[in-house]
Length: 249
Image (cartoon, rainbow, N blue to C red; front, top):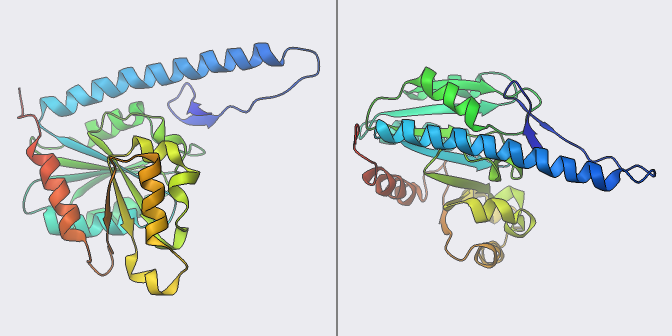
């Protein structure tokens, strides 16, 4: 399992099998440690939820495989929605601040969080990022998680919803191969639909996989590059923003 070490940076704990009969005991210990890590994260996520709610801030956690187009989507979203409400971004990557610089150039504040070898953001990292970002009351904060469809499904950050971003070049089998992420998500954005004529992707197979894993999951096909489907995505964001708790309540 991917989990956090003592300094807030997650790492992988790999199971080791031994012929001396200690394997079961070690597995039981690992499960207890993993559960403790998740419990601690959940408590911190609840703190983040209260912190955000007290300011009337909507937080959305964008998760995807690497290269699905989250940053390009956020650049476009920031430019198109920033006139309606304050927008901020918490950027998660293993290294560099390249994406945060792109988001700032698009016209909003952004904080970069680097996880090193870690494969996801956790609630403690996001708490620090939110304090640095200091979003205005009534803001929408997008959390761009590290590119990974496995570990981020397990870690609550205090967000309103996980937004799963998939892309046509990745293939149409992702919902069945990574079911935990699709069960954790509230909406799926199927990005890069402008490439459908050029790659072997079956939209019906993708949608069938989503329905089999999570029948209530909403799917929005779009192209962040060309602009197709963005109106529906923006409408969904507005719906979530309208449900924000007023600041100070």
